Length: 467
Image (cartoon, rainbow, N blue to C red; front, top):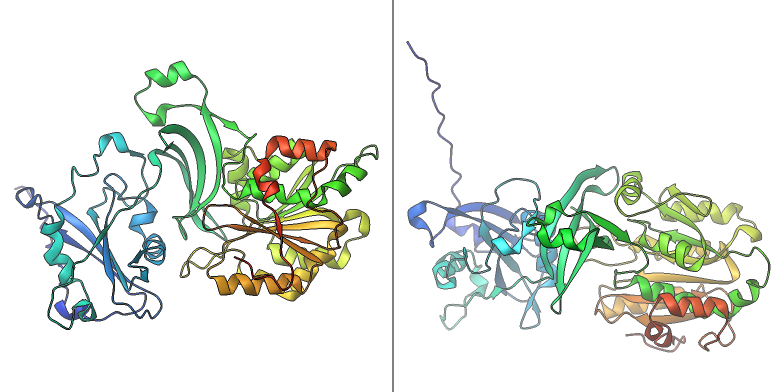
């Protein structure tokens, strides 16, 4: 006699139609729904609904069709990715109260490689009119107009330059949590470019670190059908993160002082980098500008990933430490003698709170005691260069005021990407800081970063309103 296991019937959770009538801050619900475009094949869609974490005055609702082939990407498959999409999306210049993601059911639970050649954007997307009844059912009562008109729920289009990606490793750090390293092929203005990227699951829409990579053999590249089969080598001579070159350009305000010091035999400027990531900035300062660099990151796994995939090194002139950046600086300020102080302090730290839009530096950094500690580890002619992503104009103005209260002079570079501003603060008054010189350090600086960033540096006086 043959025995068979009795199959247990899966219990399907039913959603109460009234569930979506009101906005509940940060509520996140996912469910499967029959695909109206492929009803005969019994395919299902994954639907995810997220309400704004903060009270918004608008009742605007929008939907996004997940790009085919990217259903497993953390940007679309996690709460944190969904939240960043909501916070960065608007309709009629109003923040959204609810964002709905609709896409094919992911084939697996972890991120997978992607090839746009295998997925035409419209090949598997149901006609928008087929999804209209679903979107209306998922809209809050407040979205319906008082005059009885049925609202039109707009479909927003997600676009980036990624055409292919290959996952190299997914791992977990004690501080940052899950992270992934990937090779990506970008198409920017019709030109192909390859990069290696580091992304954190807690904020997957934000590229933490990236570096340019080039195929080892162009002829081999032409014959290989699979992006994943390509071998790459690192190009560490260029900074591709949009704000890193402006940060390096910020050092130019003390270039005349450095020119004078370089006349001393054996002189090598010292830089402290708070936030290492993949190590692009650390390596660049050392290799291109001959700095001795001290790098601090709070996650040892991130540093190991930098060494394994991004060319990060630890040697006689590159010193790496695992510590909280703020605590490290405060301890250093208590014990540093003048000869050990830094000519440049470079800060690239972002908020670790996934419930707010990407912002930098974290709020804990912008305290007078922390800024004073940084000032105390700088040479008298030293410079602080910090990447900022202000969440609002008001917050940026508050940041400016905090810096003015501690540092002698303040300068700014608008990176031009609409998000990042580089602030440059000096411990002492710098004579002719914005005047170009033709010394060896300044000449070397011009050869590795765009002169346009150096020329765009502007001074922020205490009565100047930034932005």
